[in-house]
Length: 387
Ligand SMILES: *Cc1c(COP(=O)(O)O)cnc(C)c1O
Image (cartoon, rainbow, N blue to C red; front, top):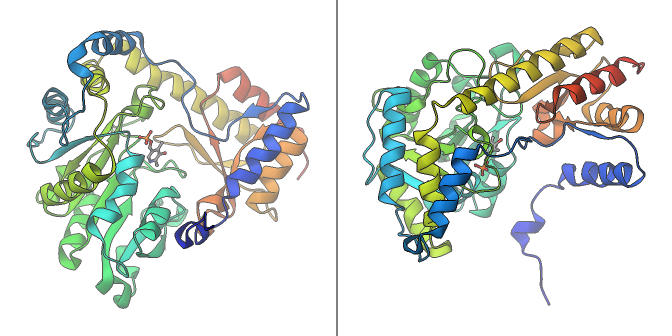
């Protein structure tokens, strides 16, 4: 009996599974492990959102199948939020699609827009979902480097002509996981012109749109004409500490959204209407002090960890956005060895950069999703190590 498809066998070995195994062994042995590996907000979902969800769940009108294109009230709340936050107008009927978080639509997109043999361009290092979903759709993955020298922005002039001719889709992700880099408006101007010239659909992953410390991140859809070539993927997960709830949306190109709707209507029956109402309540409350307090909390944690690691002699990027810190490995130590040493000798879990692609080598990522005291303790333990 065949129980594993070729497309699953073709996936690269999942590096993080091995780290997870060692982490679990350390915890089971009773060691005081500090978890800076996975980026999953540790604070509960704000109360006003929980209460909105309770009311929505109690209303029988939310209990049936949701419509393909999602709840009209949620789509209007999304359009109003984009208008307030970025200043542009979206048509709630055709340019917005509610989704079960953003990973779901990011991964369905290649099935909706690519043919077998088409090329999909993915950042290296990058969120692993982009490459695997292109592979699932029978596409060919072409990785492009994002490096410190260019502020982790790609050089769009560097693609091979043969790849560009076959390219149908490019994934971008700013603010960026894992490097924590943000993209300036001028970069998106360049991306939109490039995408128009080469007729490549841009999928810009905006999961960290509201986790920032300086200027609020700009949206690619602010660029005139961006809707002709781009989709942007949003999520309540990180903004509102709602990773488990599964609420997000896609905004932008109407034709690509129509294709996503067609794929989704064959795969799922929409986002629970109560969750869509909850998403609307979250967006309507996005100016509330408890949401601003989340940003301030991550800022304090960032300053705490970056300061302590720098004092411990490590080279650290001070992130402008996201809740990650991207740390250069000490000289002569690769990212896997460094992460192994941190777990073995300091009981600190971090993720090796190589897990995000070959250009992630030389770095490790730490997540700011634990209290400050633990970040301080982690840095103090690291300071005692000799490299
Ligand atoms: C967390 C994350 C997501 C998606 O999370 P959802 O919960 O599915 O919205 C998407 N992209 C990146 C880069 C992330 O880090």
